[in-house]
Image (cartoon, rainbow, N blue to C red; front, side, top):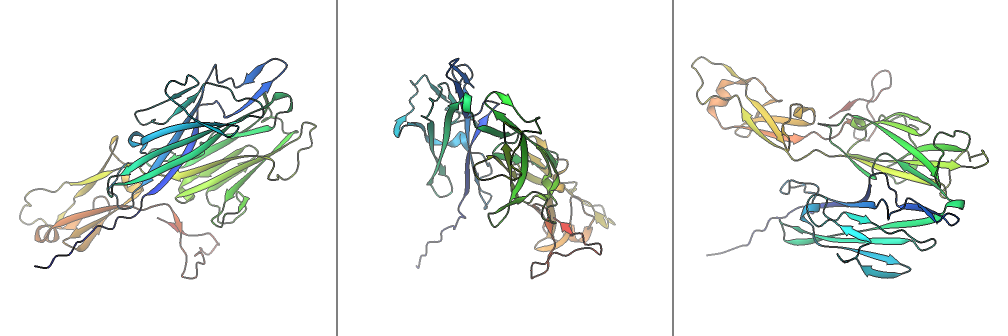
Length: 373
């Protein structure tokens, strides 16, 4: 007898980790030496940081995307002036969540000192149950305190650093609003002393103004401190960057430099885990029936998804032959009764522009790009 081992060649998991600030408390503090007041004061209202750990299994075996609840060997370290200290459960300056979907979340209950920033170092492991390999998640977060009398402008967005978009539940249009603070003063509405600029991170790694490319169909408008985007048109993900120039005398620069305040959000299209089944198929078909109309239903974490075909494509088969497409096609009764009926449901993905082989975009007579899923 001859034997040969056959092993499954799993695709590597796509992993992503980002440390998001939860709530309105930011990781940049100011300190007024004259009054002894911190803004924000973490001893009164803690800074909450959530390391968002995601995996995508292109083989579809691991269904969930966010795997915080399954992290192991999780730890945070505090680094101040180059000294690294493990944050133990007895450390009253921090509180770490050890269970659930927010596992790894840390509450910071101490203030940073002027000129002595705190670097929080996150580490955790995840067991890839397909291969029994360990995947490591690592990320750092800087907490800095500056003098309130000479505070640098702080630019923030109301969209997380990594913003997940579920097209089944969330509107396609997203309004992203920027806010500019200098110390305790909000200069967002002071059009004399600040200017806002919106950019897109292009595939080649460069930043160009949002809407400057004729193919920026995701940009609805970019006005002052508000960017409005159509997430249906952005692709699988898109990074938007806001920059701001500021002058306390009322003469902000007409264009930003690398030293000016910057805030970034990456919007990611993400469907939740789903399953599907066939209904409307009788056990027996009456003689003389020529057409049957089965239906595929898609079920997500919250139950049946009524608008599932907005993002999915259903293909119907008799054995291995395609006999129909769509959510509920009219099929020949002969096809249904003479073979094995099956349906395959796949994600159509984001909208794409039609192009010819040399990557030239196909347009209509009036020059508009043709898009499809």
